[in-house]
Amino acid sequence: MIDIKRFDFNDDAPDKIAVYRRNENSIGENWPIVYIINNDEEAYVGETLNASVRARQHLLNGERRKLTEIRILSDDTFNKSVIIDLESYLIKHIASDGKYVLQNGNNGIQDHNYYNKAMYAGTFRDIWSKLKSQGVVQQSIEEIENSELFKYSPYKSLGREQMLAEMEILEVLSKYKQYPGGSSIVVRGSAGTGKTILGVYLVKLFADINADSKNIFETDEYIDGSSEFVFAAENIQGIEKIGIVVPQESLKSTLKDVFSKVKNLEEKMVLTPYDVVKDYRDTGKKFDLLVVDEAHRLKCRWHGHLSNYGNFDGPCEWLGIDKTISSELDWILQCSENQIMFRDELQTVRPCDLYADEFTRTIEEKYRRPYIELALNVQWRCRGGNEYIDYIRNLISHIPQQKRLFQDYDVKLYNDCDEMIEAIKKKDSEFGLCRNVAGYAWPWKSKSDKTEYDIIIGSYKYRWNSTAKNWINSSNAINEIGCIHTVQGYDLNYAGVIIGEDIKYDKEAGTIIADKDCYFDKQGKSGVANNHEALLEYLKNIYLTLMTRGIRGTYIYVCDDALREYFAEYCEVV
Image (cartoon, rainbow, N blue to C red; front, side):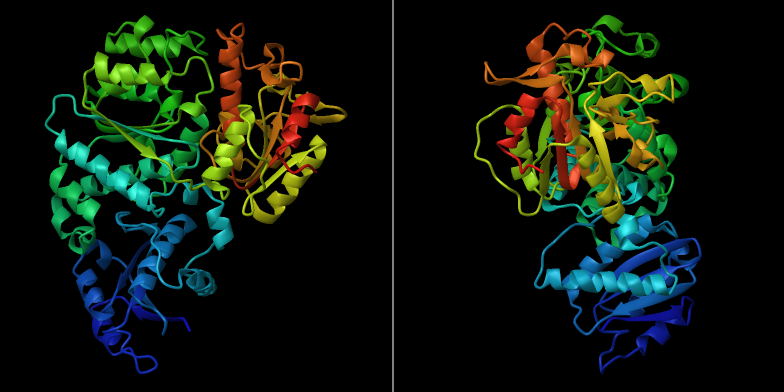
C-alpha cells in the first residue's frame, strides 16, 4: 500500500530519511522510491534507490536548497521501472497543476512499457488523490488533462519515435553547427503525431541548457546522465536566442499562456512570422534556433489572396527582399541560423499557404542550406489510431474501402444536426473539452452584428465562435460553432463536425464535388474559386483536419442529402 512520508528539507533530512523503515524494508536507504521536494512556490520531482543519499546531494544544489519539505512515496510493490514511470507521471501532472513551478528539466521523460504497467495506472491515480487530500497538489487528474497547459506542456512524455526524432535533430544541429547559415530540419507528420509536443519539448531543452550554461556540468540533469541533455550540452553550444513560431493567432495565444507558467520559458519566445522579422529589425541579431509549428501555414505572396498585404510587404522591405517572389519561409531563413519546422501537407487550408514543393525548393535551391527531413507516423491524439485517420481520409477523398467500426473510437453520423450538437454538449459535461465545429459554409453575420445568427440548418440557428484567440477554452465555446482557424492544432475529447454544402455528392458522376457558392472564406477561395479541383482539395483538407481533432470520438452531420447518404454507407448512423 502506498505510503507518503513527509520530512523537513534541511541538513537533518538525510539522517532522518536514512532510518525510515517500513514493513522491514529500509525505505530511506535501499528501496525504489519517488520523492517530491517543494516550498510554497517551486517543486522538484525525482526517483532514486537511496533517498538519504539523494537528499544530501540535493542540499548541495543552490536552487534545491530553497525548498523546505520533502515527501517520500513508497510501496512494497515498487521496482525501478515503476518509479521511473511514476516520476514521469508526477512531473507532467504537477507541471500542469498550477500550484508550483517545477525546477525539473524535461529531458528523459518518455513513455516505456514494463511488466504489469496497466495495473499501476490505478495506483498512480490513488497517489494523486492522496497528494491532493494533503494539499500538495490542487487539481484533479481530469481537470489537468483537459487543460492546455497539460496538452502543450514541455514535460509531456515522448514516445519512442519522438525520442528517436529528437536525437536525430540534435545530431544534425551538432554536425552543422559550424556551417555558414546553419541547418534546416523539416519534420513531417499527420494530425495527432505529436509535432507540437516535440517542438515545445525541444525549446524547453535548449532553454534549460542556456539558462544553466554557467553551471551546466553541475546540474542534476547532467549528473543523472540523460542522453539527449548531455549530448546537447556538450555538442551544441551557442543556442541562446530561441523562439517558437506559430502562424495562427489562436494557437499563439495558447502557447504564450503555457510558456508564461514554465521555468526558463517566456511569453516572448512565442512568435508569429511577422514578430520574427520585427525582432530581427529591432535587435539586429538573428535567432540561433527557431522551431516552426504548423509550417504548412506559412504564406507566400506570389499566390496572392493574402488577408493583409501591408503586414506581408513591410517585413519584406525591412529584410530588403523582393516581396513578389518571397514567402514567410524566406523571413524565417533570413532571421535565424537553424530551424526545426513541422509540416503536414494535408492541413494546408488556404491558397496563400506555401506548397510542399515550393517549401523544399526555397530551402535547397534558393538558400542552399543543409536540409534534412524526418517523419512522425505514430498517432498520439486519436484513440482510433492511424486506422481511423486513414479511414476518414479515404472517406472524404472518395476512395473505395470496406465499412468498419472502431472499438476504441466513437464515430457517429447524425441525421439531425441539433441532436449532434446536444450530444456533444452532453459529452462536454462528462469529459470536458468537447466542441462543435464546421466548415466555412455560412456567412459570418455575427462578426458585425452580435444579435445575428450565422449557421441556419432547417429550424436550428447557431453562431460562429465569438473570439479567435484560444476559443477552445473560452467560457461560451460549447454554445458556439468553431471554424477551422480556431481549432487547427488543438486537441478535443469529442468533436462534432458540421459538413456544410461547400462540398456535395454528385450522384450522376458518383463523386464528391465542391460548390464555390456555398464557401464563404474569402481568402480560402480567392484564386481557386474557378479551379474546381484545387478548391476541392482545400475543402477536403479542412474537413479532414476538423474530423481528426477528437481524442475519444467524432460526431458528424452532413448538410447535403446525397453526401449524407454516401457517408451513411461507411458510418454508424444515429
